[in-house]
Image 1 (cartoon, rainbow, N blue to C red):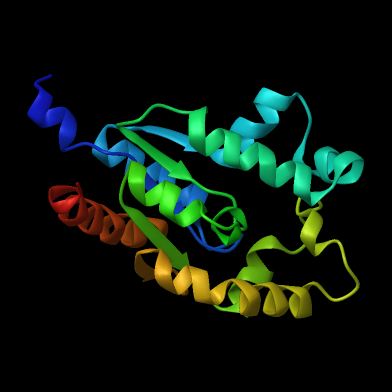
Image 2 (image 1 turned 45 degrees about the vertical axis):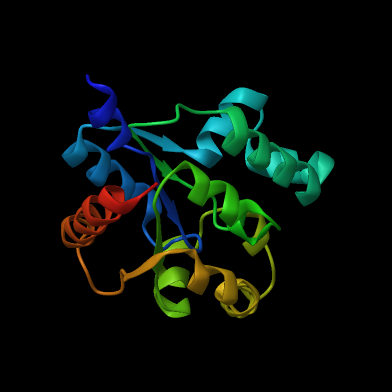
Length: 181
């Protein structure tokens, strides 16, 4: 692979709230681009030897967010990867800038109702282990929306197939990768 072709294959970072399709779409995009797929949450669990729920339960959200920063800084290759980022990862100060320095960023979006339908009953979502998960989704989306809106190209996933969204994301990536520094 020549230096020029390497420069044209920066990582793609998929961000957005839980349940927007980052992992499913990410796998499809990675396959289409011939890239590796990495889910940041799974990579953190593997490196730490504990589930996210266990990390939250024993050390809290702050400790988990430190592990996310470590993953972004040193936990994956610098090229030819599609990274599905945890929903709160870019809500941390400075994280969006870190991601953009590594490659194009695409934000997947969905309505609170769609997200709720996709994640209900999943006990691996510690931030939703509350009395009213839909209200919590709306609250968290309200807090994170400003940073999601700044992240990169927004792609809506409501009512769309994984294949359709993946095709859209591939087009965005190819365009953004050409102009990415």
